[in-house]
Image 1 (cartoon, helix red, strand yellow):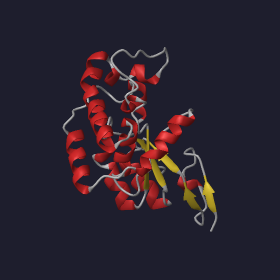
Image 2 (cartoon, one colour; image 1 turned 90 degrees about the horizontal axis):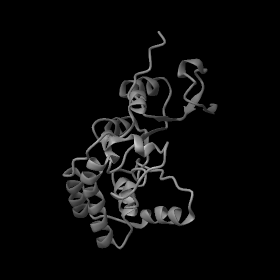
Image 3 (cartoon, one colour; image 1 turned 60 degrees about the vertical axis):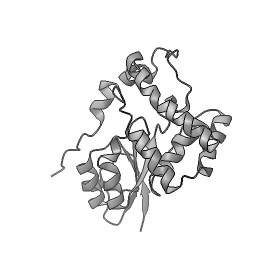
Length: 206
């Protein structure tokens, strides 16, 4: 059987039936995922997921588990916010994506700093960096969850890799989950234009 790696511009119906399709899908509609997976198996779904944005927990993670699809969180460090590198004095350059998200507006950022403070407390408890706690928490959400933190700096890369060495006991994870859930994030995760691209069902080809 042929294994083909394709871009999302390729529609499963355009491929020969003997083809095994392997691709990653991002910011998708749940029903579209079901339809695509029924045609040819989807290997992985990529979606924003972090302590700062837990939207996939509503339905998407459960669907991926049901279908045996891997889940790849992008922006697992909340565009740097969960590392503690952003505070109330931080300003963003023109064109910076974060400037267009209302969760970074001053009044919302002030409320959302509670999440950073929580991470800093756990960093002390586990002798780690706040960002490592955020990544370790994601890894603890299930064996199919594999975050992809982005960086251009070697020290950050090594720090991110170090998150794989952090373990939570079941009691610790339950405690951390409760603490994260108790913090109500203020503001939107993305600019309006980007939000409009998300969760859009692909039209039927029939």
